[in-house]
Length: 481
Ligand SMILES: C[S@@+](CC[C@H](N)C(=O)[O-])C[C@H]1O[C@@H](n2cnc3c(N)ncnc32)[C@H](O)[C@@H]1O
Image 1 (cartoon, rainbow, N blue to C red):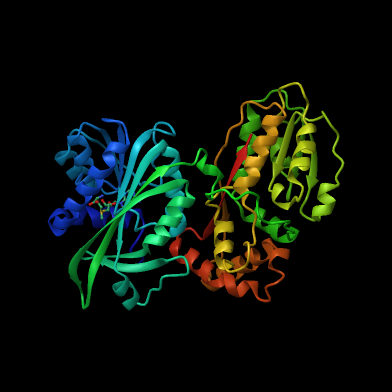
Image 2 (cartoon, protein in one colour; image 1 turned 120 degrees about the horizontal axis):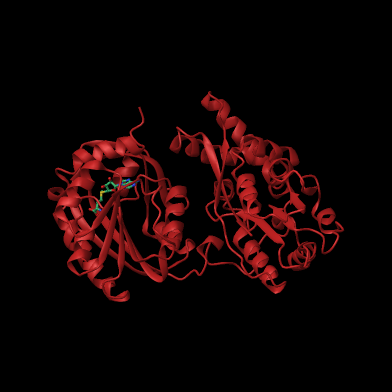
């Protein structure tokens, strides 16, 4: 049985908590030094989040003693009980960090995750960093503490990849084996943290000499402090390039249709919600690589839908579509901007299709920075010049600029998790199906590749290995309405 997942982590750490503190005495002094060096960067007595707070020491206790308002989040029942006893003036919440949400965005002044992100895949680590970028105030600070034992990891047959990450690693920690752990080298961490919208302030390292089984190796522990600089982290990957980078994307209609058939339709549900409150959506224009109309029709039977399926259109055909002006109460533009070359004029024409009475809604849907479809593909084709897929954050940013220019005032970003399921029971079949699908999604971008599937196999294997219970790929996207 796989030694990972919430229940396993809860049980293991609830036992480990008895001996945790006595096992790492040197770690504590290092953490206090790091935290002392960053504490002046934020206002006194402000709000701190301790992610994976463990026994409440060293992080929560440090800040409580200095008069800060501390919230600790941890999955483990034993750890939470101990932390509540040891640091009674902090508030401890038992929760999986993936499910935790602060009272509002931009809430905390400091977020610390000290040795608590190992059990996440790199993709989920990035999603978590993106969350930190939204939970911490602009200008606020995060501190990520981690370590790696390269020789030990490699002697167990695991490899650091081209990005400097070793994923799917199994390791013994205080008598418990944990599967599916992720270890990143300093540069790999720095890059991921920067991409999530932070400026690296400092990397504090300490080396502890310990013998790990028969591999003698010192344990390098490092804490990266970083300041949030991204105004809107959802537009990442940061730093934003000048343009969306890819000239045009031709897609395979059948592959996209199959993708949508396998999805949980969360994207459509979110769009439906955006229009739910609207009583005056009489006429809606949908431009998408598949139809949204049926779902919307169910909600507003009296509404007229004009659908333009762009799945089988070339960029030239797409850009030469004639749209009526001033006609629609609602305009939905889904995964379309990535296929357009003259973005500004196209957006202007789309926005002009909306009625000018101030009540029209325009919804633009593109991929979030942590969209796994894109991350997996980019990773597999990382050595292609320019990368095969457009930067969707820049596309959304252009959408926002065009909407503002046209007089739209209340523009907001809504997150949505579209999950693509590969429920094939046979593992090999599941891998084959998903590789075949993914390799066809961005057809022309891969024309230079003779065997796109070969490049995707390892990435997909890792994906399903890491998410063995889920068998899916998350396609996160942001409709900005
Ligand atoms: C190695 S301990 C670190 C404790 C403390 N932060 C420190 O620096 O000593 C890792 C902690 O992260 C918690 N943890 C691991 N995965 C978690 C998750 N998904 N959500 C919340 N807590 C998690 C564990 O329960 C454990 O208490």
